Length: 125
Image (cartoon, rainbow, N blue to C red; front, side):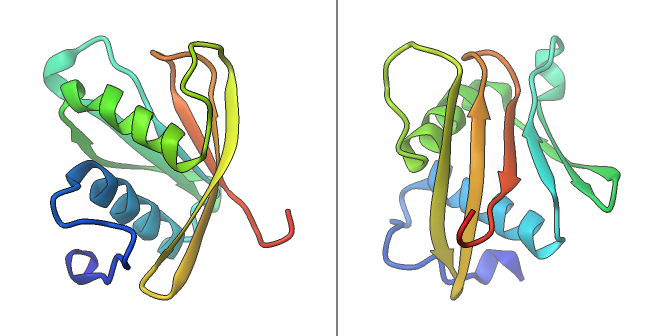
């Protein structure tokens, strides 16, 4: 079902990183996640982990290739309108409309090679 989502006019079909991020955010929001973590790993063959918490229980998504992690983190930072400088930590809110639903998530990046933590934001927060 998620593969057929209307990702709206802000995404191009040839933008796979952005599409991946929006699909992940849409899925975890649909699952009512209270936290999403794009992790780090010391085992490159296992990929970059994605975990999310629903009702106090952590779930794992299929890891994505570790070599894509810098691009995904950079796109998340861009979507949250964070500066491109090397100063950390970074903290911002990204808001995108997907399939008629607003995805609003607070992004915290403590340093380039650390976990990225996202938490949902309600309108007005």
